[in-house]
Length: 213
Image (cartoon, rainbow, N blue to C red; front, side):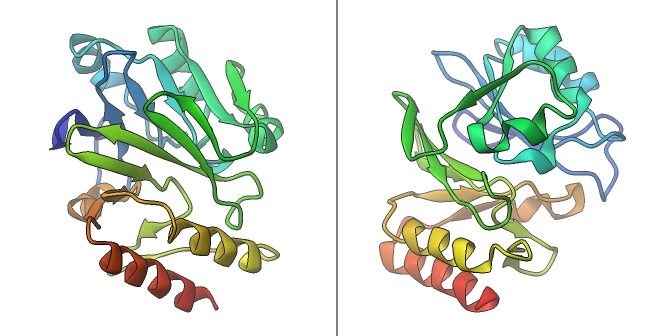
């Protein structure tokens, strides 16, 4: 595990290879968070010992159903934690996962330091999570934005382009200091982007809107 910011860590998959994806771990007093990005061939079983040493996992937060796998339940069983997703994604998530807790698909506070930010367009019920950390507010973009090895980009669904543009437009009004995406292991040096300057943040989001317009 590699620390990106104070209390924010990259979790590499077991038997990490270049094309597998990373997950994120947040250490917090009210229960640690895991932002999973698994596949049937990509698990973090070999990282369980490190996670236990840091206090375990209190919640798994899923941006959308594309990251759902049976390994989320394996993590849940081991650490005694549920997998949280939006109500709009629940049905799709439950196709592969059993221990699922759904929250309303709306901008809301999940905890005193965690906000749910709906970002439909890639998936109908996709969300980002805004988490307060010692170094600033971090937006966990999940599957809404990602780094493809060369640049940050997004993929709206066949009918989701206008919704994703609206989601990104709303993000311009959301103050955050960093944004994360679940990159491949080989691209993980780009998994965190600092956007503390408001003009820089708006410019970055405008670029994303332009790419899909």
